[in-house]
Length: 585
Image (cartoon, rainbow, N blue to C red; front, side, top):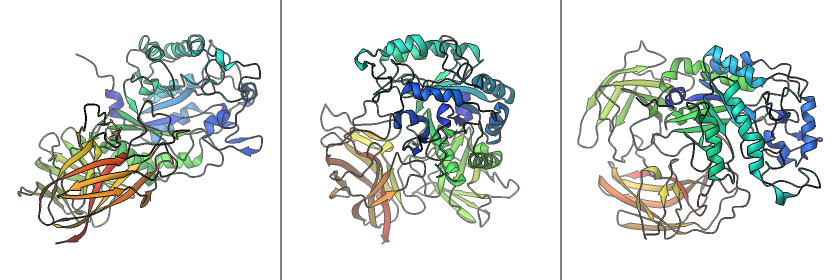
């Protein structure tokens, strides 16, 4: 029988990321100046020469580091695995490497192997121990840089003679083998920033792991479409409604390594939203902390993680081991997860004493509020022609939880729902790009939907997105499009689209009618564009066609996201098209 290496990882759903290293000493400030950019990359953003940056090792003495306390915090938060930056882009390692002396044991007054202590603490407390390793960027090695800055390696450095293979052979592969050999079972290796890595190099990084620990997972940031699972962009979510073997790496504020003046902490409600949204798409949520140079986890992080843990003690059943619910569209009231014969309704907006759900195909045997299991929730189902309907009554008037409240539905089989795109209880219809049919306009058309649920190469003369959907309530509806632009800081005007529905054609330039604040990060700003209005004079099934008729050229210099790969940037990142009731007939 084949063993599924990902089974523990899917069951976990929630992990702790730790960015810690020499960069925690300057904490975002260099020579008295606050440096823009994420804290763990201060060497690059401040253009610090390598020999000058390496002197930080002489100051690194985190006497307050306590591996047991760090791992216990992860346990208290309800996390099931821990990933530590064994080596980040600066090339400094938090483990005792015999390959290179630029490590925490040989180069610092601290002299202790942090990776070893964390591995032992994880084993004792029963969570998976994992490592981050920056395989392509190593700014301490003259052959490991990528887009080096002036004077990084001194005035005599000849960039034309750089050979990354030397860094791979001399440092990277030998250090990966050390990690795989000396620290017990490793759950996964979190590679990062593949950049210009060749297929052969990526395969070598995979083999260095699997040759020693075959069950150890490798994330797809190893490059060249290799790896055991997909990592989304930093602080990015999937936009579909289906399961994907994905992981959302996220921060508590905006940086990853400690930055003393980044005080834009996400609140617990936002963090729980992120955890639940990830799980509702079959993704893991890897939430990061950045300890100080002394080894102290900021109190703002501790408080938030412990509060999440309290929620997980009650509602974790709706997160651990779950996947996406059976519906092909999102809901205005919250999110949905599924496991075995159970469906979990996770409410961000509590419905009050009763609730209606359309499209359910299962018989509901029992409904329970996870935080109030003694309350009797009554279930009523009927099967009208318009939609299979479920009614719950006997719910409390107010939400029973401070944050997200969960209703568990025990079903007569695997969760099953109508795959028709229909109106939800608020009257809206949401058409996700992940659910669209692609109409190709030529044999050369390369329009497709990626595993995040976003169109790739969605530009003029390159295909049309098509949806069938049902309207129950005749009336006048507004049409809006939601898109993101994660490679561009500013909204780019000039994108023109054609929308055809109900024998009416609307041609519009997409405008930034409303900017949607991304609660996770500044990397993936979203925009609502108003398309126009449409009249549906009777209930029934309709078809919508959405086509890009003009796409201006994008300036791709300095993209905010590093995971674009060979993605065609001339694309409209359409998340969904939505119909909103204006006037009922």
